[in-house]
Length: 172
Image (tube, rainbow, N blue to C red):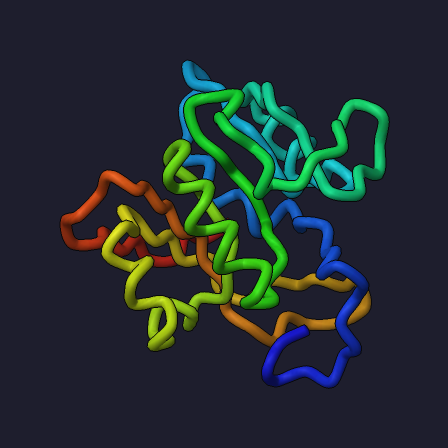
């Protein structure tokens, strides 16, 4: 999954979002707004948001794993069913790049990504649309393993053209 691990990638990059990875995002969200999860998988991220009284109106995935998540490719969306997208997208670049490009044209989009991705040359054209980066630290993706990669929440907005605000790690 990561550059420091030897795990074989899971099909379609399906890695349920751990609760600890979502906690730092809560300070940036509002219970007065609604959200859309376009890469919902088994709904783990939806559960974490709803457990903290955030309203998730849009719930979609290319391969939904529960009944309240509709089958749709994020690339086929033509609107956001909320005020913003919040998602843990696939990290494989040929899938991720079009998702970033597409979603941030539709609405502000919070994406959970590797923290060092902001330094990659291929991310430069998207970083000009990055409003905020919220550091998380190492994410433990598997119950019996320690986290190997630092992660962060990135807020992309196609209308944004100012410097990015960086928010340091929050103690959980």
